Image (cartoon, rainbow, N blue to C red):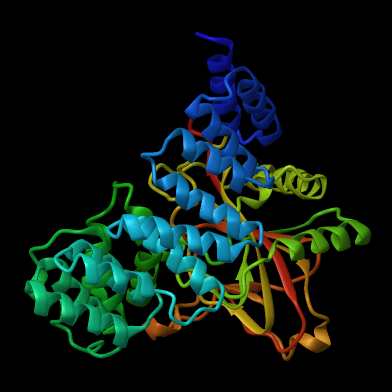
Length: 457
């Protein structure tokens, strides 16, 4: 093995451990020894991007060395947007999509960039691609999914209708129509809506079924769909809905699963006023978007793009160190292990950040009630919050647990809440429903992250 390849492997290992500084040092040393190695060039771009360094030019170099990999152009476009060069990023994706109209990931990336820039016609690239490739049913359904995620129900219906007019009804389009009928409210009260596809086994369809059954008062049916995923990786997405079913049915296992506020803890981290002020300034500079992604819980605010806590920045590193200390205390203080429980079954050794970001809410902003099915432990660290007089009447601006998403219309009350305060970190199970109450005025600036066990430790 060459020295360059050894350094590349070291960089990969350090990146897996989330030692960004060490990974960057190793991959840059590899690049000096092998400047034309495609894998090394990609490593330089990826680690630099995660470190918070300029990476668009580095992705361009990686793409030059691997011209067949159009996914590198998507990464380059994302890096351009992060460097406040949104127009260049869009133009790059438009160019590549002009040559590869069936590139679904490219369309999705471009749609996301346009939506977060406040472009109302964010999905227009699909129309041009379908005009060139009208028989591509998968491309049409990808267009539908982008619109459905944005809850643009009329446009989503139109895409489905056009697809079926051109190519006939298929299972994917039928499921799309059922999804719209349920989630838009059009047929939310129809108890038999999903009966015609009872034979179809699909995790995404089961989630749609569960939501429809809960919304329509078919609680036992919702429970039964959740239970059949027990023991599978997909169950993490169903635990939150099973919690509702058990609560509504008066099943004691709801207490076993959620325990009310049992597993919600708050920590006052030892930030000085000056440290919080500097951290807030750093975070504000990272909020380059105008609107949130459609698939996120943010309403009336923005969310950052890169993995926040992996950035090489002394201000971020200081915050990360304080966070890691609190997470360690939270894990060490968990109740006894329970091999069937989504929080208590996990190993309690080393942990990793599955994602980390900042949210900046404007006056009237809030988080819709949601969960984090990809995480184990989730969080909210308050960096700046409005004065009490600006928040509005309590519980304005508070973080609530255990309430239901409004669109489900369920008669469940919150378990409790956390009152925001600069320097306070709330930690809780990723499967627990949580959301925030809108506030009147001011700015609410937070850091959030998901933690997962390091299974390689």
